[in-house]
Every structure is written in structure tokens, then in C-alpha cells.
Amino acid sequence: MARANRHHIPGQIWHITHRCHKREFLLKFSKDRRRWQQWLFEARKRYKLQVLDYAVTSNHIHLLVVDSNKDVIPDSLQLIAGRTAQEFNKRKQRKGAFWDDRYHATAIETGDHLLRCIAYIDLNMVRNGVVTHPSLWEHGGYNEIQHPTKRYSILDRERLIVLSGCNSDEQFRTIHRQLVEETIQSEKLDRQRQWSESVAVGGQGFIEGIKNQLNRGSFGRKTLKCDDSFILRETSAAYNGHLPTEKGLLSSKNSYYLTINDLKSSR
Image 1 (cartoon, rainbow, N blue to C red):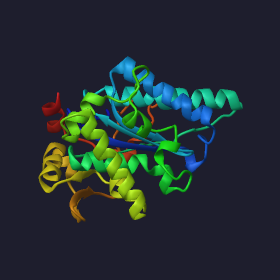
Image 2 (image 1 turned 90 degrees about the horizontal axis):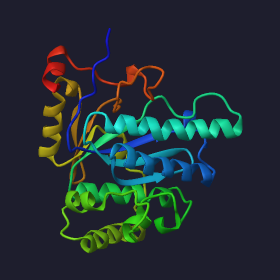
Image 3 (image 1 turned 180 degrees about the vertical axis):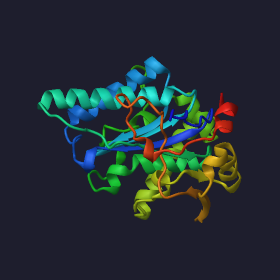
Image 4 (image 1 turned 45 degrees about the vertical axis):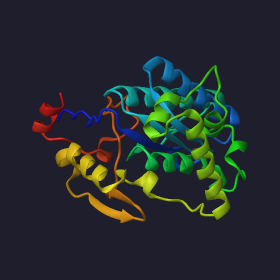
């Protein structure tokens, strides 16, 4: 049976998480984390990937991106993950999988939910006790947000400002910095699973919109209230490019499939 195309939602923000195989600490060396960042920069240049934030840890990555067309995200992740793994295995004379066979993507609403998701990503290594402040972790987007670079910029600042609902770069940086500082001071650093294990996070209207866009792909998924947000949950969810087996990062069993009518309507 032919594989279905993944469902494409133009302009949607996705929080992508991808773990090393069996949660091994294959990114424990800074040189490998830097190479992942360099390949992310290359994907931004080559495929016009719109990056809003990211963080590279010792055994997984966070990537916040905008869905611009149906090929950009899967092509970019194939490049970044594939080249990072190839270089590591060659240097270590290692064979075998570097990444888990799937990566997870959560749809994030613009505005306040986006800002909170960015703060959550930036605080990853603080949450894990590695550093006391995100500015001390060089393998993430916090420092570029707070101290913009003119060259080799990874983040799309213009999109960040617009999608966060801010009127200026200064306002965006101020709100971002305050969110991070308030979270650290409140010591509310527990892992919040909704940002990385849900299908979508946002207001109730946003969740209903995502369900409608997924059509029958949303069957069996539940909308739950979580503090001042709504989340769309299921047993497991994956954002899949449905690449050929020899190129794909994901296995087909981790993805939902569309009906023939859905495929016709999405083309």
C-alpha cells in the first residue's frame, strides 16, 4: 500500500522533539551539539526553514519551527539529523542508529502560548540542573534572542516578533526575559509534558481549529483543560514526512494516515 502524504498546515508552528536512540547521551560532547547547530543553520539557508527557537541537550533536541510548505520540515530534519549522525558514527567508528525512529511535533498557538513554549525550551538545561540560567548554555536560542547577531543568525526574528504578538524586538526581548526570570525565581521548573507530548497546545478555539484541519486524523484524540490552556492529546503522535524507508527518520506505525478523500483535498 502506498504511503499517504503527511497533513500539511501552512503557517502552523510546531514544537519538535527528537531523542537519541534509546535515550543514549550521544550529544554529550559540545562539538557534536555545535555540528547539529551548524546543520540547522545550513537547513535555514538551503530550505528556508523558519526557526523560532531551539535547544540541543546531551540526548535530545528541541526545535520550534514554522510550517511553510510540505517539504521544508522533513527535508530539513533529514539533513540535520542525518548529517549529525553520519559525522558522529564516522568519527567514533560506530555503527547503528543515532536517533529514535520518530520525532514528535506539537502544534503551538501564536501569542502567549508561543512565548511560554519558547521559555520552556530555553529553560531545559536549567530544569535538568546543568546550568543555573539559560544564558550559560550556548547550545540554544536564548542568547540569540536576547543578544541578536548580525551574522550566522539561526532564528527568524521578524517571524518571532509577529507570531508572538509583540510590536517590536525590544518588547519581545523584554517579555521573553521576564518569563524566563519569573519561572526561575518561582522555582516552577517541573517538566510540563503538554509542550512535547501533545498534538496541540493553545486556546479552545485553536484546538478546535487544529482538529478540523486534521479532519479524520483527529478521531480518537481528546481535548483536555490544562491550567489556562487546552491541549489535544492522544496515545502517541508524530509529524511524519513519509520519506522512503532508506531516507526516513520515522517508522510508518508512528503516524496517522489520511483517507483517499483527505488526500485529494490536500493536493
